[in-house]
Structures are given as C-alpha cells and as structure tokens.
Length: 168
Image 1 (spheres, helix red, strand yellow):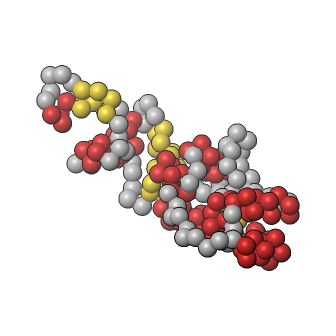
Image 2 (cartoon, rainbow, N blue to C red):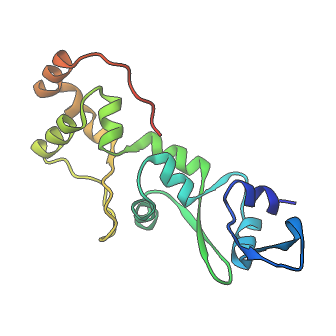
C-alpha cells in the first residue's frame, strides 16, 4: 500500500521490469529499499531530503549527523543503508545552526561580507568529521559579530534593497 506512492515520488527506485508481468506488478525494486520504506516513520525524513532542505550536499549533512550535531538513525536493508532524521530534530537544528548563506540572509548581508567578518574575527564553525566539507555556525555565536560590527553596519547602509530570493 505504501510502495506505489514511494515509487512515484522517488523514495524507492525501480531496478527493472519482469517481462512476463504487465503493469505495476512487473516492477522490480530492491529488498533493502522496501525494508527501509517500512521502517520509515511519518515523523522522519531521509537524509537526502534533509540535506536538500538545509541547502548542503548529502555527504556534508552526513558529517553533521556523524558529529552528533543532529541525531540520525540508520535503517539497514539487505543491500543498502539509509539514514533517517527526525523532523523535530531537523527543525531544532535549523533554528540553531546555519551556513554562511543562512547567516547572510538572516542578517541582511552579502555572503562575501559575512565570510569576511567571520574570518576577520576568527569565529570557529561547528566541529564536523574530517572529509565532510560543510561549515555551520551557531546563530547565537555569530549574532553579535554580524549585527554590531562597523563593517556590517556600513555594508547594510550601502546595500541596494532588492527582494530576497527564497531558499531552495
């Protein structure tokens, strides 16, 4: 009952077709993906979806999970391992942490100026395992630097007011 919607929205990828079975009965899917699908809870999302919503790549977001910044669990199938993140944990993480892009949009600065202020003040990003290239900062750690520095105030005064683009 959950397999067809999962195939249609891309959570389960068809592996092939049985020539002898017509229609939907002939679709071949991985056993591991079916196991992971049935292990799915409505209050969880795949790590791929969480990474896309946060605006970083899959491997970077996996580093955030492995570092313990956001709790995740792994559903084991026969052939694949899928990571899941609870939606409440993801929302809590998004409220507390952000990339340079998130910081720039939140404090009405360009990404270049945001990066320059962070580098100039030597603010450290959250620890992520080696090989996972993503930098996230706690909003409360950088808020004073991005609102109270003279460079940030000057940039806001010079910046043209254009409508903000929504996050993808």
